[in-house]
Length: 181
Image (cartoon, rainbow, N blue to C red; front, side, top):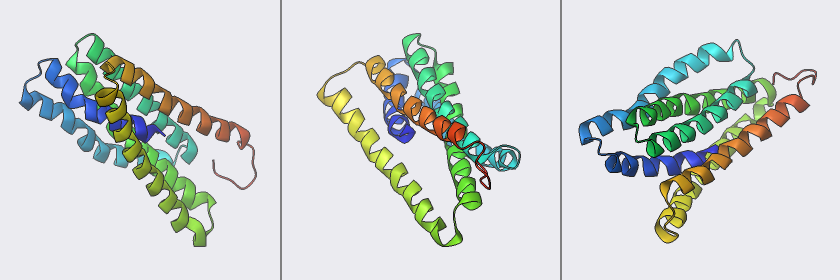
């Protein structure tokens, strides 16, 4: 769910940076913060997953996804490229924590014979989110002509729904014996 919004925001980022008049070299640095900090986030997530339950790390990744969109909304509305850079930094950590939290959850809670299935499901839903994100961008921006703020507000709902869904799972199963939630 959160991937739908994140892919769409990445589609809009270059447009927002151009509208704000950010020069191409600086825009490239802002855009590259995401993949660079994904690497840092992977190492951080590996350290944290031993100290934090995997679904909590996963939920934090979803929460960071909402922060990303909030940074984009504020950066675009108030014409502050630094907020867009902050959003990109949060995005790098969000994706890392989503992946590590989910993978660790699978390792701890799924039978050996079914782990590949669940990892495949994760990959399927991430890719489906990427496709739906591009469709959301195309429909809302190109076909409907929505303003960027309208699109960002729509997209904020996707990670919010995902966050509360995972939070509900954590609360429901927090005392479940034998599970490392």
